[in-house]
Image 1 (cartoon, rainbow, N blue to C red):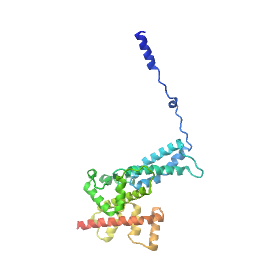
Image 2: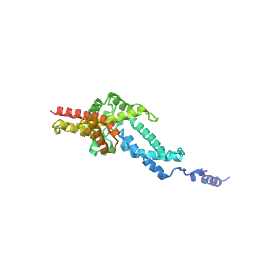
Image 3: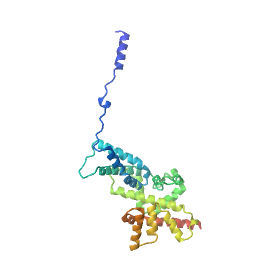
Image 4: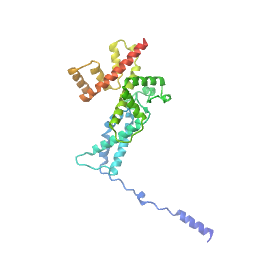
Length: 299
């Protein structure tokens, strides 16, 4: 057999295409039992829930990413047949469950890190100057990562005052949520207590930060001190509760009238306002003490 013949056979074999899975040429489109418009509308309907859930740990800036994860999870669940229509149960309820699972997974992931945005939440429209001042505080039992903190002396002061202002169990729950191993399971009552602790620590840290920014020379008397302390609270609702209920020390009928007025102003329920009174009082007292201490030091 000649060399030319062997070469020709080799070229023929190399030019022969390899077998191709015909399913790859025309993949089967997923069968959706729910219209796309209804699916996307149901996902968008959980946005407020997602914002509220992530705001508890100061991660409102992650809302768009989590919403995209929910869209993908809902689409994948419907396409794979994981969704089964049940009489009397709307599709939106199933999406709500998907959103809850995705949010819980995201929260566990964030709390598994050793950094926590205690003072700022980009979703709240903070000024760029404040964002540059300190974006993330490192929370650890011994502050080993202090070298990574911007403006270390100021950050240490905020952390120290925050730790002194919150109850020890709350502080340990918040720190534990960052330092203990991650759990990949549905949220437990202990998880919810940890999230509440993180919220309490973050609110306290932000209140203290703003109280430290108050110029002692701008406070001329006790009423002025009280007004500045109210202004240090971290949200408009808490400031409204402190100004209308905590500061006047209303009780009985006057207290209920004030609760109703605040609820109407902020478009929430009376019960929600009543629940916030304890938090507003604690934060107000914390801010008052910090400002008062600054005034004493300035003398």
